[in-house]
Length: 305
Ligand SMILES: [Zn+2]
Image (tube, rainbow, N blue to C red; front, side, top):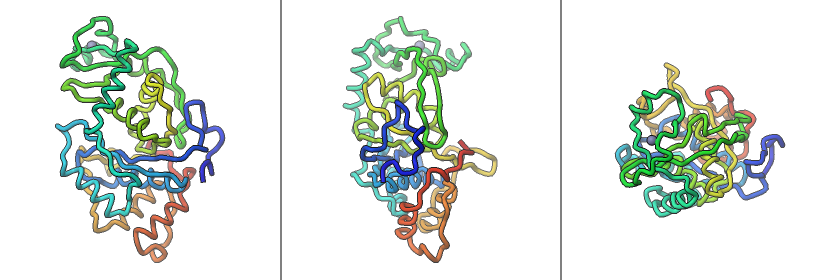
């Protein structure tokens, strides 16, 4: 039921109104198998979409071959399937979307906003400061083999996350001109995600809170490319005993697909949602029906963001 339970003050100029059809997505990078933290994102995005009678799509973000493997893609898709989280569209793969990313880069180039950057990380670190100082803006380096940055004007971007509330950020100050194509060339995450969310008509981006601070950059790109801005909802992160975010890099345990129902129950609990007694939901399907009906954004914990 679109719009149900959403306070009026969560709809701002940059968030879609909720009268449109809902399209949500889960977009993992195939750098390793899913763990409990990724299941929280998968289940949260699925439940928010299904509770609002929406579509849920799966997109594999495989634009960095050095960090990824086809085996991990298979593991992720097998794991989603074992947990009965089935996408409504065929799974899409970013590695096959180069044409669309190039078209978006062309649009930025025509606006005179792209420039090649030769700065090394070491050089930028030595300069101190958290944002790119604009060193190469006027240098007109040839593009070949260089990172490409997009010129960002001063502008305060305000958006309302459906859980975390209002954020304001001037990207020109916090990050500066940021990279949209890396050396290689490799498409940058910010560019690929913005192009695909627009192409796939994603209306709601529900994902882990580690990406909250990417949102203003993505909205800045959406504005330059004349794309609509979806609604955003950032889910709490799952942390290990040392307080580190569960991730493949910190050696998070892969999900055991033979314990799908208990994994789903654990993820549901971490989303702050109430689990029915085990006897009422003896199967994954029955449990997911409960999730679809009883999902509540208001219960999502705001800590661990
Ligand atoms: Zn530079």
